[in-house]
Amino acid sequence: MSQLEPSLKYNFTPAFKQAFQRVSEVLAEAKQPNSKFGAEHVRAVFKKEMLALGMQERIQNLYRIYNKQTAEYVQLKLKPAQRRFVEECTKRDIILKPRQVGYSTLMGVIGYDHAIWEEGRVGIMAQDLATVRALFENVRIVDEFFQKEFGQYFPLESNKDNANELSWKNLKGHIWVRSKFQGYTLTLLHVSEAAFIEADKIINSMQAVSEVGWVVLESTPNGPGGYYYNIYQEWKRLRGASPFKGHFIPWFENYPEHPEEWQLKGDLRADAEEQDLINLYNLQPHHILYRRKKLSEMGGDREWFENQYPSDDVACFLAGENNVYPTAVLKTQSNYVGQPAFVGNFILDGKKVRFVNDSSKGLVRIWDLPKPGKLYYVGADPSGGTGGDPGAAIVQDGYTGEQVATLHGFMDPDLFADELFKLGQYYNQAWLNIESNNHGSAVILKLKGVYPNIYRRQHFDNITKRMSSALGFYTTNSDKVAITDNHVAACREGKFKVRDQRLLDEMGTFVQLSSEHGRTLRRQARAGCHDDLVMSACLCWEMYRSRPPSDFANESQQNAMLAGLTMDPDTGFFTPDDNFYSDQEDNWFN
Image (cartoon, rainbow, N blue to C red):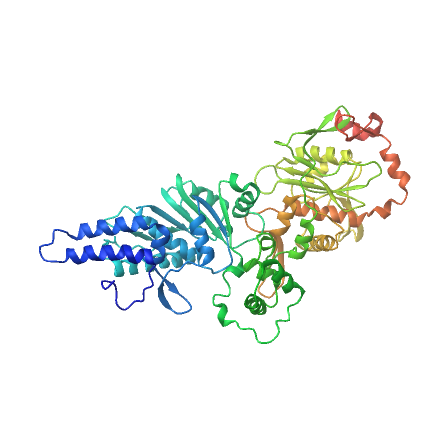
């Protein structure tokens, strides 16, 4: 041990001490006059001993990192959750974690170790240039101290410095820190804060890694939706059958970092929420005190805390400081979500609309079949066919508020109109509220005159100075704020019930963008996500608000409309008889 840097503190594991002692004896013998051993022999012995120890021993003994609290360069010591990850990691790993718990630093050390001892080609990927520079600085510090402390045992000849690249003349190992790795050849890829990086960048960069290479996606949560979220949910659903293995680290496994400094003075006086956490996770007083401090720093915003310091791997994805739908609303709505009873497509059989099960290609998901005497509402957000958001329609039971069906997929406007016609007819000639912006006007034009129940919006005409009306719902920015506020309230009060997980996911990534003074600028899907189902649900609820079931007080009107429906014995679905359609509707089928 006397050969090490005297100005630095060391705390080696027993196994490393024994291995290092053997190497030190070889070095001492090599320094003797007329020794038959040279520097290459010492290097070979050191490498053999280090490889025999394994990665976990090496990363805790050979490398130093910067400790922000003490402003010192200290040996990496694995926290319990980090140790569990090192022991359980596979070749495809996804980590969900709280903020600032050292996993980017840990992966930097692992990457350096991989480049040195396995001569691997390591890519460390970050979302922006500032983060790239910070991560590279972590790796540079590891390299600097390794050469300073162990260079006499394992000398490295560094190539000329590069701002974001590390390599050595006498090693094949290589480390790059970049914002993407398309076109590279890697044996290890670490993607830092993957939930905040575009899907195509991650996917293209992963193609740089061989089948036997190692990929680690690590991040704090960033709402439901996106590539990282989908991979993590796939692991939860498939577990051992998933390509990736998930690793979730709750905040209380890492914070507070020094529990002994959080002494309780007097009674804890835990409120109901805190007591639930204590009972559920066996939290100690120092955990509650730490949580209270962080909540105070965050202005009491529990959603923000849950996003930055997750307790479980469900609520953290629902929380966000600029989300339009509050976490409490999303949690409540998640209780109604379930798998659809049927997935398939509508077809026209003469003048009958039939449903065909086809789970592999189905545009339509059904939770509840149409029932005679029921009033249904449909909100529709058309698409242009390819690119952007898909076309979407949500069907709501007018009496229970439950979502009963979804139409979703990329369709040209004329084809979307066809599907919307069949959907509406199938659900008892449901009332349609179609967004008339952009491609919506083409959809409305095709349905006009052949479908009877289309929402007609009243508005004041500034030219004629009279009230006027137009088919469909033209959405301005202020309208979007108003109808989403109405839908949030309906979801909070349980008047609207979400059944489709895809809709709930979109609600979780639907955000409000505001100016620095707090004025709302617009509401939209977070980057890389969609809001077509959200807008369809909002339009659906707006249709309900415009013509609630109480407007149909004369039930005989509804019963007369439904008189032409009969149950299909093969499917159990209600289908129209030949006399169900008007003369205008006959034109649709001819």
